[in-house]
Image (tube, rainbow, N blue to C red; front, side, top):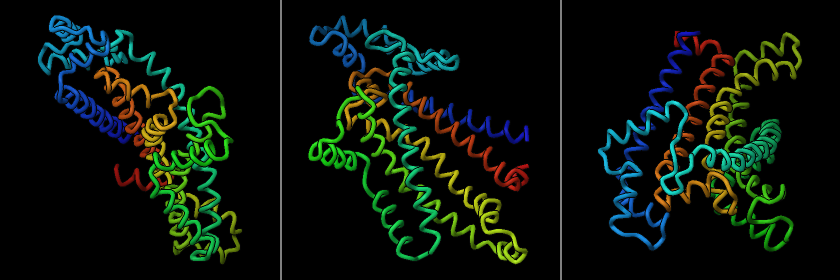
Length: 312
């Protein structure tokens, strides 16, 4: 088991290293002059060639690619995301403040998605191909087809503009999180409902289940001890990916609802060509994806020990 965990951790380290290098390379070779964009963000119209040269030197843009990459990756390995090219302040405290808005929104969306998907999938699978099952599949398909930005605008139009029940913009009160969380949660519910329904139906078709019924084992116990573990494996995959994608979805939703968080943090950094901030967000997202996938791999081996035996 220790060897398997070590292999998974090594694989995760390779992926993170590649993500960090790709992020830095793409931003380094982005079109336009980043020194000019940073100078404009700092000094507005008071920009001369001398000012641009000073900014280029301060931001480390006057050296080659590899020296600049080494100067960035070294502190990053120690948990230092560097300083903003525009403000000169440390990136991590500002990003941590943005995360304090984004993480609650992501978890609220996840809870809403689970609260909708679990009962909907369980009710739908009681009578496969019945009207409830068809209704659940139709709702999940429609939810998966609607983009988050379009759904968010529809919710604003209905609940904020026409009904006036909820605020549409900002994050001043707890009511401001309802519409963004609902936008995220409906998308999560659509994916989880379809996968959970398929997993339950597939688990119920296992050939060994009738033998447990003939032995007189209660249906509730069969569902808990045998159907649920088999249905959980594909659900865990989607759940883990949804958990990681929630961060990306929250960034888009925050922009739509004008909420402070990683969304406005990233958009402002891109507009100002503030490379350290952009790199910090991308690296954070990569760490989240890799960590979630690592935990999923470990959880697989808890649900089904045969997976670990095949890798051994």
